[in-house]
Length: 316
Ligand SMILES: NC(=O)c1ccc[n+]([C@@H]2O[C@H](COP(=O)([O-])OP(=O)(O)OC[C@H]3O[C@@H](n4cnc5c(N)ncnc54)[C@H](OP(=O)(O)O)[C@@H]3O)[C@@H](O)[C@H]2O)c1
Image (spheres, rainbow, N blue to C red):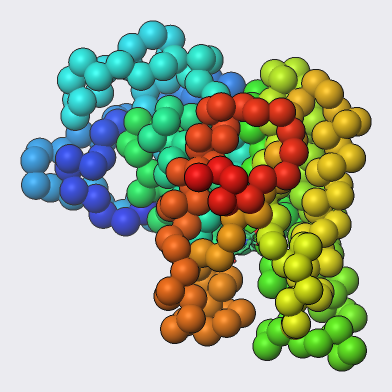
């Protein structure tokens, strides 16, 4: 699949200096590794106040990744919109890879980390949603958006190649399984296999692919679990079984890899599409916003406690 760059017109005060270039290449032979320092391909976008940036669709030849960011290079990057505001050099920034970052908890956490000065590599299947999400992040952040399915080994290889320096892997992307949520007695087994592929195999495979980078920097893995991993909710047996498996993978990984930190977190109910798909939009609307969980996760990441399982309540 050949991707494209998607950009919404943005008002001048939100633009900053942006660099858009090709990310990792298409499926098939593994493409060249992203260089650690971002070379600008397009000149900085500087428009008179009030004007908007034209959509970049068509400006760039077939592109599979989207990189938005500030001026690369050491020291202070001068940005017309922010005057003397200091930002860390690219080499000093911490890098995080977040799966499922186009909406819900993944996007909320991406916003929190971007505002905290992290460089981000984001992924989700829906390319347009992912690129919109990437554009809406803090303009001082270095953001690479690479659309694809985490169950696809070639996509995972592209992601791993995009993060030769990695401080945090967030396995957040997740499927819900068959809906309406069926009892185990009639659970469609092909759906269950697919769910294990997305919620268990893919996160472990991504951990395997990024372990060298994580070990090199004493990084951390954050796996997003669920209370359905431990509670006997009717209809949630398939999804809950995948989260229980992810919990135990996290548990064992934490002792097998003492050079990295492994957290697995039950975020509690959140007002997201996944919950709406499961219980209906009306009931989901009563749940807390994912931003509240993202704030708690940011505190966890900053405090860097020893590995283990955490619930949202414990993180408050
Ligand atoms: N919401 C809750 O109440 C709740 C409760 C407990 C735990 N959780 C957990 O919290 C995490 C986030 O859930 P959420 O509620 O924010 O879900 P969401 O709103 O449905 O967002 C899921 C994200 O994952 C992406 N995604 C799904 N499957 C993918 C795949 N195979 N490859 C790549 N990206 C994929 C989606 O984008 P695309 O569809 O475009 O790929 C989207 O960006 C999940 O691990 C979930 O199990 C949620």
